[in-house]
Image 1 (tube, rainbow, N blue to C red):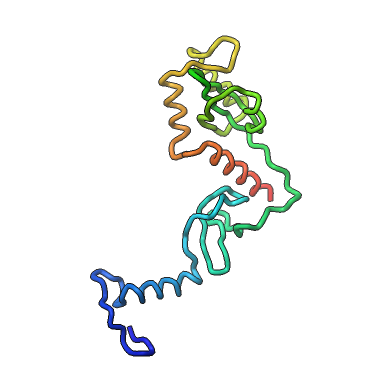
Image 2: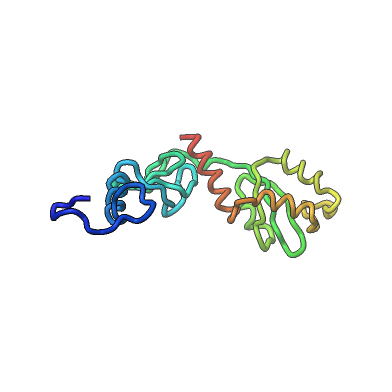
Length: 180
């Protein structure tokens, strides 16, 4: 590559896609990235859809999923949407299967050691899970003994999910995006 002060003396690395040294390849990359953006993690979840993947431009960041400008707040007039979930709480050697449209408030009144998983659904899904795991249910309660079948179901719900709360927040954000 030729610079104002003469040709570049740096060697081209084997396998480089262009006949440029590493420094000039990076300069070319930065030149293109200013218009097409660079995929990277957002500093926090998108307020609209909950995604953490963004596109970085010199002028700022946008969500890679819904293209909401990171840092912009959704309209104040939108109420927090209701997202009904079936939740799985672990407490000692028991698991509670319940449902709520506001699990943060609900969990404040429940004994639990850990939020194990969420799945989208209302009372219909909750009742289906109660029937599915009925052999291990403590009579008259929504609490179940820990057993392989239930643990396998929870593991399936958790597949690829490091934090159930992040998943729940994403569902709420997506519902909010659908309202706007």
